[in-house]
Amino acid sequence: MQRISLAHGEGGELTHQLIQEIFIQSFGHLEQTQFDSAILTIPSQTIAVTTDSFVVKPIFFPGGNIGKLAITGTVNDLAVSGAIPHVITAGFMIEEGFSIKSLKEIVNTMAGEAERAGVNIIAGDTKVVEKGSVDGLFINTTGIGVMQEQQHRLKPEMVQEGDCVIISGTIGDHGVAILSARQELGLLTNVRSDCALLNHPVHELLEEIKGIRIMRDPTRGGLATTLVELCEDFHFTMEIDEASIPVRRDVQGVCDILGYDPLYLANEGKVVIIVDSNDKQKALDILKDHEVGKNASVIGQITSSHGQSGKLFLKTTVGTTRRLNRLSGQLLPRIC
Image (cartoon, rainbow, N blue to C red; front, side):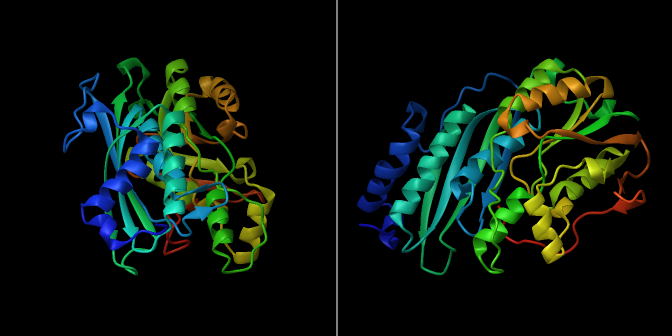
């Protein structure tokens, strides 16, 4: 059989075959998954938990697929919270008629990314729905991580004037890759999604640098929205320098043609770091030792801290300064 049928979701023989021949073959069958719940021993009393759903369109895109996005997105959310990713669950909602070959490719991609991240996929669920009820395949994940030891954790309460803002690489790559893959506008571009694991460089940063204040991965809403949220949540004011923000020439070209601002385009493999200015060079050196951080750059600084309401300002390339706000309205739906 080459395609998913409703019978694959009925809990009978075809369900058993689907689980055995695709999911267990790729993810393995650990002892703790022999029950209706995975039985875990967590080596800490402090854990981090995240959950996410992935509905990207198209399912396959330059630089990845929905499976790679599901693992990297979940791992990265844990990592930038200061946790060491430990285990992941995965739930699959599959449309009747979906290609089994494509499902195997996606699941194998997930298994490979999980291995690279050092996490286990320890529980899951599969549902098959009638054609038209789901657009091919949706994936839901939950990730659990163990928090770093106290001395290596994030310290947002220590944010102060003069702290530096670092981005680990070029922005907007994922948004443009998805847009070009949809082939709705006839774009010809070689931009690939930046979808990538961040947990290894993030772990090294926290282990080696005491002055790390905050980390976030700027996904939906882009860099600007993420920084606005940080300013408002932690009550500081930040100024970023447009000339220092790394943007690929072809990404900027697409933005110029379509009227988009790369500051608001999605990323899936970047981390924003606020760090003590004395540690900025060490942070850059660590990031640049990893492929995901080779284009890391200091893009701004904290100009005041502990204010009543945080604000984000952009120093433009023509020397003016303007305030940035969250993304307003819908830019690119279903990018993750």
